[in-house]
Length: 397
Image (cartoon, rainbow, N blue to C red; front, side, top):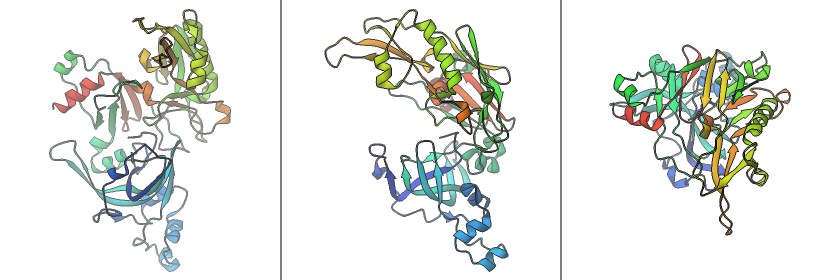
């Protein structure tokens, strides 16, 4: 699932994926037909078709679909299918057609059935092999279509990403919750629900309306509060500025000015105790990195606390593992292994040179939080959770 996009799409046979070697098993796309016989193509006159193409009017789309001029003039092109469309992500793209069919969501007994669910059927993609469930703010997203069926289910959703590291596999699924739920007293006593939500308002972006944009006011490193640039606190009338809360981006991206200030403050504190690991930085692209000792040292390095301060007096204190990754380096060539730690934040470049959002809150920094998207009250909330315990609790109901 991806909160940074608004299209639900599946790979359809025959399917070609460029630059996807090792990313998927072609045999996993099991449908032997081009599309299920029950699926119907979306009309070129539909709102969904206009949303997929975004820049073309329905008349233009019907002309591309070869609807005759006299039929276009009397708005009677419903029998002509929506043309194929191109859809791009930050690291991939696809060409697809729109169809409608019934979608089964196994969230209850019996399963919830969404009639006339609109989705993309892709026969070719670049670096996007397995399909995406778009949860963004657009009309094609799963929450938007779910809200048409049941506002109670579609106007709020949340997820809780189980913590993981790159060298340890995730053993529990991360729960995705559609609609609202409440914790009972027994669950609270067990400690699965560790804190109340802290909320920050959603910001509208006229250029990228499907993003969940919020404002970031500052980042605290230890006791030092580093102010964010004005562009990160708001979205202007041209759609520039703000921070996107994105489940589909791995690491948090900060504009260069703020990023440099944060890592400088971090280095001043950690660098007093630990040596800078420049070779690790060159090898991994992460920085700053520090040598923490040999592999016989059991202690976890003490690092300064990092707190994100959002607009609306909302502060989120990140667990150390969410921004400082510790691992072992060496050992393969007979040398001793050394513990290394690296800051897991990315430099997004100069905000003045960028259009659109200037920051992104990535999923690595969201681990161990339940992140709720309240579409009715137009706000995003964060609460510390034991996500694996939350999964167990929800599946016992």
